[in-house]
Length: 255
Image 1 (cartoon, rainbow, N blue to C red):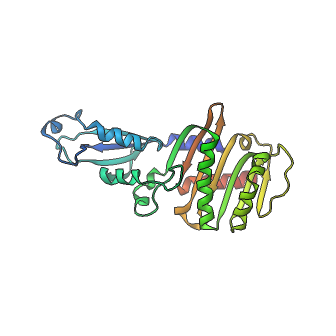
Image 2: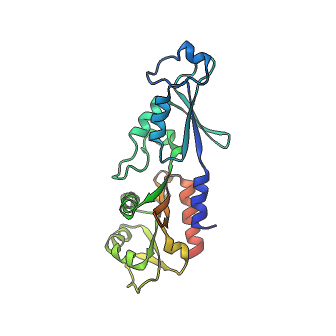
Image 3: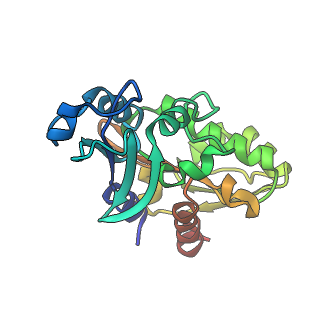
């Protein structure tokens, strides 16, 4: 297993959201719609495709012979039904998601259960500014909770040095903080956090931050990306299983 393996696993987990009898007005399907499985309101499908653009989900529409149920969607992966949604409720949840400057995440109230199978997002070509904004949202969540483990990869020790003051404060908050970096330069010890330096290529080429939620699965979150010539490629997630994989891998491989 490696960090690239985790990214590949998330990439392979594409889900399919099928919208049955999509109707933008929310009314009954027309008689013509009942006669043709090719006749759907593409507007609903296009709207959900845009809202789910970063969610690793393929959206498609279909019309049943009876025309019912209207605006009903089924989320599947590998032929297994993960969840069913009323389209109006799903749209409302997606439009209201996330509180941070990056727009990451989902609501943690009633929508958390509705969207628990849509808690991963893949991305390509993120620049450092966008990566930093995403990182800040996870760090801020960890700081608000105030306990638990936070693991962050800085690629090089000089980049960690740039974040020294922030990570001292995270450690003082009561978090168990571990930082990972390749030893490009000497680095004075940083109070209140653990530092793991290594020559491993994957630490030099990956940016990550993972928070274990402090025992609260609903607070678990992580960002993991590989640096490529055109930017960073990877994902962010609020799925407890995926966050757990990352934290366990880092602890086993480097601590």
